[in-house]
Image (tube, rainbow, N blue to C red; front, side):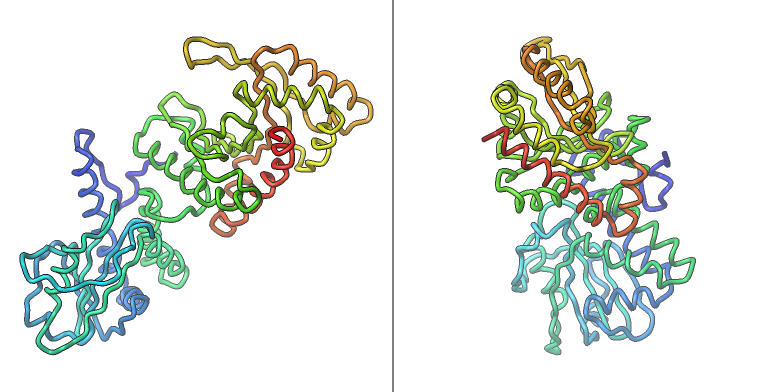
Length: 414
């Protein structure tokens, strides 16, 4: 697995930093990464960035970081002025109208300026833009020449997408630098979900880097944020998702989908897990309230249950797994795998009856069974699908598997 610190923009975040110090350090470094990328690429890159912001640039741009002002005369002389707020995501974009505030001052995170343009940047990597702070920035840009000051908010994800699209249109030197910046935004989770890569899965070999662990967990969160609304369209049962903890010893990370407030665990539901081998999509029946319903359905309607299994038609990498839960201490259980039955066994005329009888017997005899139907998408295929269109095809495939699972979930829960 490559080291995150191989990226030229990545930095060591001191272990003893408090959360607010860590956030401020990340905010400053991310703004600096943007400015360094613009400053050290050919000027055409900066001009395209400015055009994306609605500014027509003439000639070279210049840059300043953490400067209170670049001089009133210089500010007043620019015919195009923009106050740009950058936020972590659209949830923090509620600020729409501003009025200048004359009292006090605020130091901008960065300035971009040239012969005919000026951009003042205030960025956040957590939380929202402060209305008073932005009002003071607006006052800084005001002049006596009645030049309009535009105000726009972009997310870091917007900026990530802009530079991603720009990569293949630039010279090699710029291409390398932009790739580094794009990768940096992905590693600090300032981009939308763009798929999984080998680094994500390789984490489960080493487990030894807190920064990478944080990135893995946040990538799973971003993945679940896209999957959940798609599942909700299939069935309103899936009105929330839950991300499991990822600790040093854990061999996988997971997201559960179902009713709010962790109620989903009381029912048959969908879980998606990610580990060294790839993604695993599970129809999950774990806690006693759910397994009691499963036991009742299998015993009373074995043929109906088998028909649902036969209608899955997902692929060769789908199987049923039966485990036994044994209480170790209060709220803590050991899980021991008892059996794995490939779905093909229920379709084969020679084995279908014996397989159903065997499954029924296990569910009846095990006091606390854990039943799951699992479909594996191996890591190579996950990465290939991710590279195709930044994860869109992968999401579609996962959603289709979940759609097929949903029929059985409704049968068990009904």
